[in-house]
Length: 400
Image (cartoon, rainbow, N blue to C red):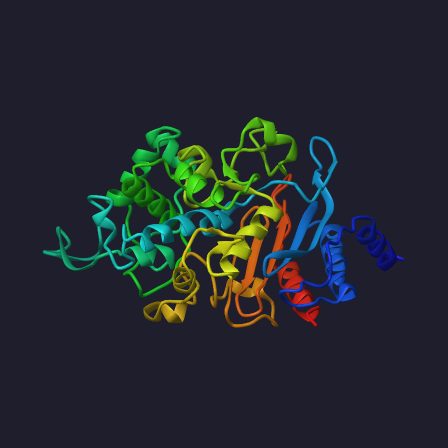
């Protein structure tokens, strides 16, 4: 009975845009529909109230479907395929990384450059030894932090800073004080390139480099040079209230559900939504365009955002940090890359977002899987880890 109920839920939500792409693979429709079952099961188990799934093949959406509810508090509102989601850390990939790689290919930044070249006073990692019965400290070794290490999370910066604590010390919405704190006061966790530690601070540092190099507000640069250039109409930072009706709410915070305000505390409270670690709002169809552009060497239907060689470099794990498995801005082979499932090619990049979003892009097969959920709504419960991998396997298994 339960199985029939799940199938009925899935069938009632069905929206399918075609099985065969003349430029790419064909898909078995019945096998693709198995994704409906595992997503419905995850919803029934309380992992998320709703979801949108898009399967992209080359430059076309093969499968687009909405499940469950966009909102369950204060009102229940059904999910729709054009729902806009807070992308959380997927913003690091589709916003910050793409914009930063443009600076690299334009000759404005080199991946090997020291961060201090663009953020004056940005201190290195250094080793301190105590001498004279611990009364004096002497720096015995130091290592410069470089741009590429920010992108691969091997810089040695800590993973996060408590936004409430920082705001109490320096005031809310004080991004200048925050980057100064990261640059000059924050203790480094380890020597660069010796460990991997996923860090939002890496990408907040990157967005400040973008601002210092371009002279533009970070979110404005990304909007003009990435989102607008691809013709995206549903993707932005700090969305206007006109879009709120289409945005999936996230967590209840201070007694009110967050809608249109980025969930991540550093991005929202400290950086006012203009932040490299989080802040992009987007929907499945716009993300499908970004995925298609990357799978086709940086171009989508005549609109180019990156060169083919830049995309290839971005999606490659640098040799000097091969053991950590992180490409530039994207995950590829690390322990956190399980959302790729078991069947896609080795040439696959991916990323997740805390709110319940994820993207997987298989370059060899030109297949992308975009699974967007509002996992944190309304009380930050549930997990998407297993269902992401299950869906990836189902999509791969549906290729004919």
